[in-house]
Length: 278
Ligand SMILES: [Zn+2]
Image (cartoon, rainbow, N blue to C red; front, side, top):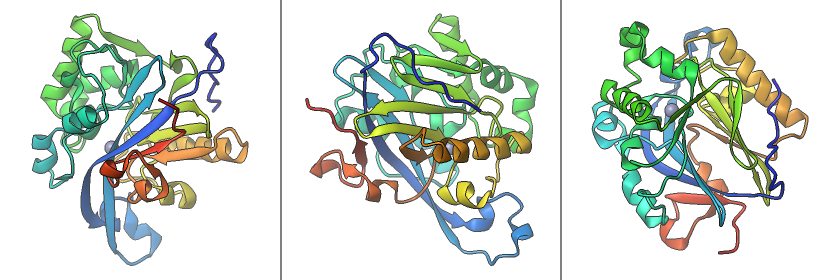
């Protein structure tokens, strides 16, 4: 799969990438890797962290997912570390501005706060919207990962004319390219972002964990396993080709340990790649 580079006229656009860790949970390897017993390895404790991402420069702010809402998170046993609304406030993100929101897929932990942004255009794969508004979305093993009222919120966004469906790939801001890979969900997407530190690939849940990528071990929740394997391979190909300088996975623990803190006060909450001068 090719991830096209941006073709915007402002070819020198770069962004800082802010990574917000808003939640966590402690679980086991057999609860995150599909058919774990087939690997013949002992089970062990495993930590899953929950992130949202903000791309920003002096001209543009783009939100990549909006994290989970407290109710659906706690109902599933997740720990809320910071309310996304509070994180946006502390990071100076104006929720009344029409910042575009990229929805990488419609699981509850990625669309929980779309309603905080009443003026934002929302970009999502058409296949993803079609899937979550179809009868299939009500089947038990699929419905577990979504909230019907949050999907209804996306339907409302579309009724207001703020929803932008796409297929394949789309450039949502100069140089910021969203690409469908499927697998985890029918319209699961990844995002590439140019920064002063090189190209950052936000895999979202096309790759939950680095181990998933390095050991070719698919995540437990999947709608199309061959597509998920192809998505993992496409990321490996991008890395091997040198097309990507940094990769941010959807749910690895400890991501912030490897990043510069956004500020001393937000250490452990928000990290940054490619900081730009204010
Ligand atoms: Zn997720």
